[in-house]
Length: 161
Image (cartoon, rainbow, N blue to C red; front, side):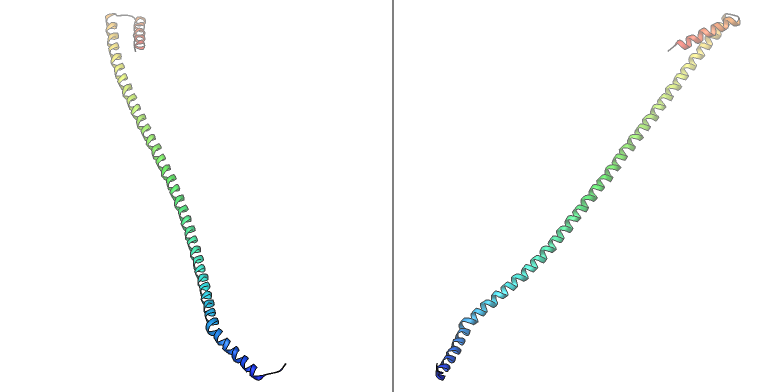
């Protein structure tokens, strides 16, 4: 093998020319496409991270909203229990007041009827006393007859409705 300097120089020039053409027409566009691809991938990674962050934030908001809804539902249930207890107590108190009023009215009616009965009885006793007195006056009887007469009238009074 011989070393030929002209061939070596031609090969070096050919290699440089090949490198320049490849660099201008092949490597440049290839590296440009690869750079665009790298930028696209980087952009997609950034977008995915943002989407993940937004999804986590949305999930946290949904959890907070769900917790708030549970608290509101619990408060509504407790308020309903309190309201129903109040209404039940009011109904019971109203019923007790009505029962007390009816009882008082009944007691007043009984007292009134009792007073009427006493007044009627007094009137009858007065009449009977007058009758007894008139009978006693009509008959001048001894004390034994008088006692029998009084007992007879008392039995009559006791037997009347």
